[in-house]
Length: 240
Image (cartoon, rainbow, N blue to C red):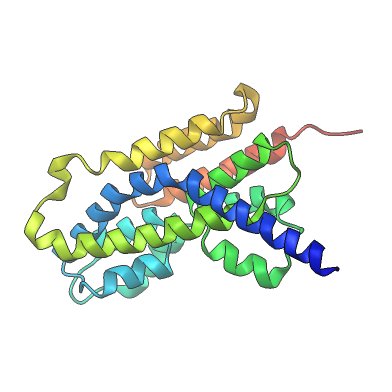
């Protein structure tokens, strides 16, 4: 590869990273309130302040972190927390399956660190961007521009929430926790591709809701992920 070609490629990558950072800004703002809710709840349950950013940085998945905080005791039942976190994070199996065909151009040594940063929002934004560009592969620099900024925002504001938690008291009284729902509704609207393509989501939603109503614990997350994946496979058009 010539130096001019390499320089052009690096310039294009920087532009894609910047594009991802700009696209992530509204979601980063949405992260702030419910990251602070998580941090505040964690310290109010007795979790050490230093442990909160460590947890949120190493396990970048809000649902399982809220589960961990809910289950936190002194001393903590670590095996239970790990098991429930894995159960809640099982949706990443479905997310990874959707990513796989669009990520094959990325070498494994780069794909694995990139996937460490995969959260629901970064995943949804990368897929939506790929569809918008009518491309058959994800723009890795764009994805990293989104994911790294969301990761840093999440760590910073869960840590801030942990520090301010004892001062703020019950932070949910301010309605900050509604930001979680609002962000997901916006993401779902951006990913809408018509009723037929949304049927696996509907199947997943119904299965998860029924499991939530009739089965104790967090099994509804795993059931929703598995049924959604099966529905997507079964509804995929068969080519002769």
